[in-house]
Image 1 (spheres, rainbow, N blue to C red):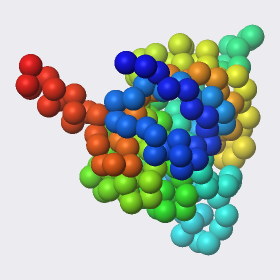
Image 2 (cartoon, rainbow, N blue to C red):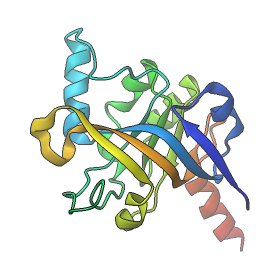
Image 3 (spheres, rainbow, N blue to C red):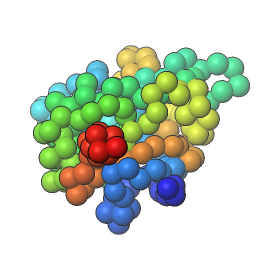
Image 4 (cartoon, rainbow, N blue to C red):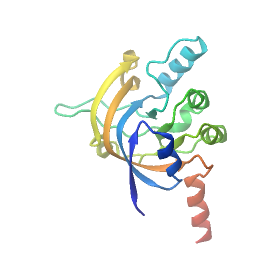
Length: 184
């Protein structure tokens, strides 16, 4: 299987070219946000306030990095469980979010929203936070600094490894893998 190199933020052509199961190396800009940051963004939306960054076309990585050690850009930066933010995800997708990186299954509602809004969900390898951190070239806290590791960060990444889990065509790589295993 080949690995595709893609650039974030994602454009429509890139998203349309990806299928569940594709391996990718992502370069460009992504934003970090975990549970509490998502809750704050959702509350801002409900109050008619602007989000801390222009979400249109952007990618959110569900991560709360560990503290940075001397000489490093970031500490360990492995993915967190995506289902924790599922209740906020359809709203962010409707506002223009185009990509999400995390680990684990998404709810049926999120999978339907991914198809409807033509977005993509990618899985990063859990337990490989130190390895993933090598692909992160710069980090800047841009919002909710009081949340510590859960603050929203703007990250520049290079060759960040991931796998397409849910694509715009309704495919689910986890389900495909289960079916393949059952047939074997």
